[in-house]
Amino acid sequence: MVFSNAKSYRRDPNVPLIVPLVNTSHLNIIPQQHALHSPPIKKGFIVTNANCSTTGVVIPLAALERAFGPIESCIITTLQAISGAGYPGVPSLDIFDNVVPYISGEEEKIEWETLKILGELSDAGDGNLSFDMHARTPLRVSASCTRVPVMEGHTETVSVRFARRPAPSPQQVSEALAAFIPVVQSAGCPSAPRHAIWVHEEPDRPQPRLDRTFQQGAGVSVGRVRQCSVLDIKFVVLSNNVNIGAATSSIMNAEMAILKGLVTL
Image 1 (cartoon, helix red, strand yellow):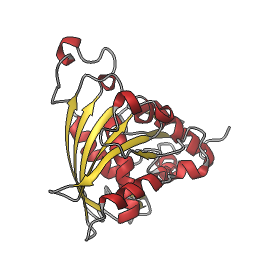
Image 2: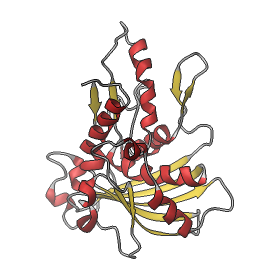
Image 3: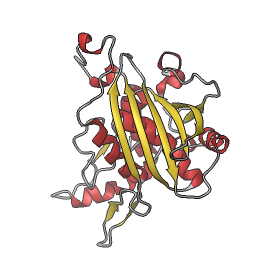
Image 4: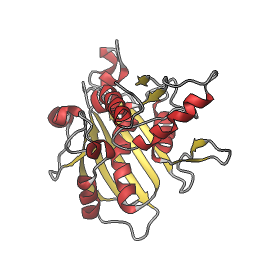
């Protein structure tokens, strides 16, 4: 059984792409993986978790869709930490006193992965399951990705438009985000954070240096929830790219697979 943080199998039609605070129900495709393997297998499978920036943004998006119905448009700008580039990372003379407005392949990952994660796992009509890529209520995602001189913690500014009219107020959005309880919490996963989303009331939060280690980086922090004059609502989200954006997600996915009986100890 493989729980992978690598990008290699994220687009495979039979491999779940799981952010554990969002879509652990996608583990239900594992029996199909077994059956379609040549030859069929009984135990082995692969589960992937998402790109670190995708992970941070889909958690509040999932909370908002649960509370207010489908989101139809989303504009995201990332301010990504240098640790997200891996080792040896970004040359110091390139990032010091600078912002790099391009990260290869990152924008496409966010725009595509968000649809798979927030979409449904449903009957494809041939007896198999498939990921519908949010097709029932089409979602348009536009991402711009930048690298900034921060060691850890990805900050993202997000604007959303809801399909439902009238749209919820900033106060309603803040309350819905704070109240969000994912399945990994209610199921008792040991690595699940106490608060999937911590909502800040302060006008200058979240900040990487202040908030990236909260709850061992297993949840996300949201702040500056306010009206958007172009779409409906805008906010700032901070996630720890080396915890919930990477290893912690794989660990929670494994814990959930154990609780669902897909892994026996």
